[in-house]
Amino acid sequence: MKIVVIGHHGRRDQAEVLARLLDAHLLMDEGNHGANAGHRRAIEWAAAQSERVIVMEDDAQL
Image (cartoon, rainbow, N blue to C red; front, side, top):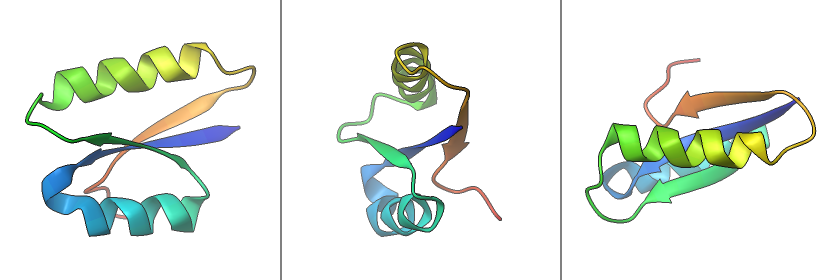
């Protein structure tokens, strides 16, 4: 199983900490493209993986 964290540049530190804690791949929204664009990128990345993927947002509470 793999994990991908979708992050917004305004919460970069939070996203990086979460990704590091989960040993996750991080996809950062460097502009203001919105949640839908981030989720689309995550789903495209997940589709290219050979195992199941969990998609998490940078403001997820563990």
